[in-house]
Image 1 (cartoon, rainbow, N blue to C red):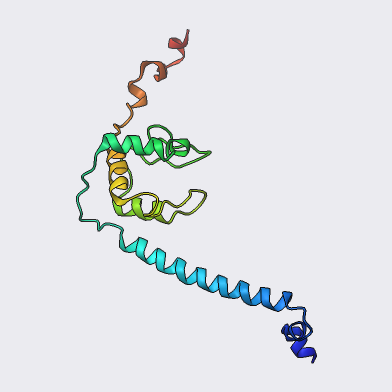
Image 2 (image 1 turned 135 degrees about the horizontal axis):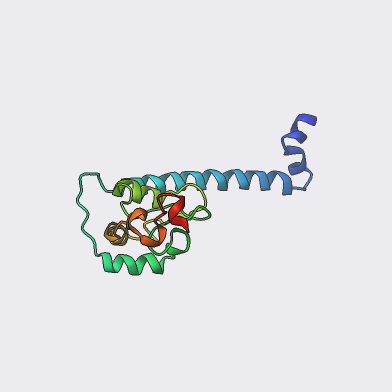
Length: 155
């Protein structure tokens, strides 16, 4: 009887089914969600383009999508990133396959953008926008940022 009570059967027999049925329901729902999540992730991974595929997207539409999806909120308007929010993603974004994989299944605080939210064509456009961002000028060539050579020039 004690063993049956520990397993929850005792509560089940005495009419108080809340403990056992909640546990069983929780386990069943958890198992179902794990199975569905695994299948969905497998489909997402299969949709990631191969490294050899050339990237042809609309950078202008990519800029519009970048702003519409709120990418700028963490990564900045030019993909420059911030130590307090998102990482630098432009210029020279990571390889397109890695880019899509991270967007579909990110780590950290970034929310996932599954294919139901963002299509592969939209990601191609966003990637093209990030590729179109020019490199910033060298800090040594900006007069305001140039430091004087010695103490005599600081006067």
